[in-house]
Image 1 (cartoon, rainbow, N blue to C red):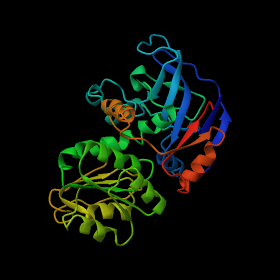
Image 2: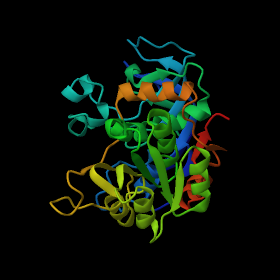
Image 3: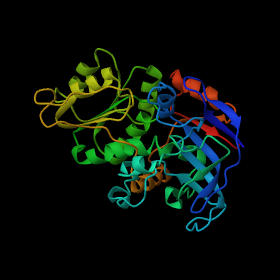
Image 4: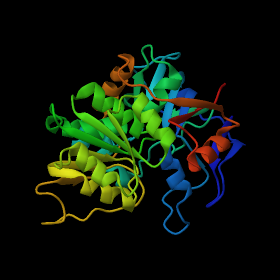
Length: 346
């Protein structure tokens, strides 16, 4: 079969021929219908050789949709021909967190060498992929595969980041979304679907600010030297009750801290490497800073339900598997407005 692999540190990903995978006991083989391209993959391919965490070659893709093609011995709960979405942050399934469905925070994954697809294990940018356990699959149940693929991360990650802040996003509150890319433009929609808060979107790109307005942002503000004063003006000087930074670079995390209110939630989701100091007098009183990761299995199903209800949708552009290197180049260059989705089987 054909697969998109990252094969050499610092090199572009390549479409190559690899052996067809065969499911082992307890595993499920999927014929991949759609696979989303993510900035996390860019981060992986930008990692220097020193300390690189994965074994190469690595088949990319941690947002996957497919059709069940074959079952390993002992598999129950799915049948051949089922259209399914893949839950990506695989865990051991038995630790305290996994028992609560929070496999994104598995306590034993590192110890046991468990890796997500595309982030250590072979991913979805291939004609076929292996899923380690049927519990990591959810039925599409009518969702379009292209629309559903980004929901598995670009939908799940912002949903997980926003959900703990819902009690603070009451009428009259403000939520700020920094970075209106693949995740940020979904965050705007989640906030509009689940809260009555005013949503203010920040980005350096006018095209992405237009996307923010199109998907429901009440205000779209250019993220420049005037951004902090603009948000403060919009909130009558109080600041925002919740700030979600989907860039995570040093300049954006500093903006996140500066536009926050007393008792605000600040979520640094992006992988830009920035850090926000926490201490008395460094942030508004009782502001909380978190760095959330992906989402739980329960939240995975909830996000798919939001998609089925039409409450959220991802702006997508599609590519064939042979065009996948181009998709990643466009993503790297900031030319993808929304999410790039690869169609490995046409």
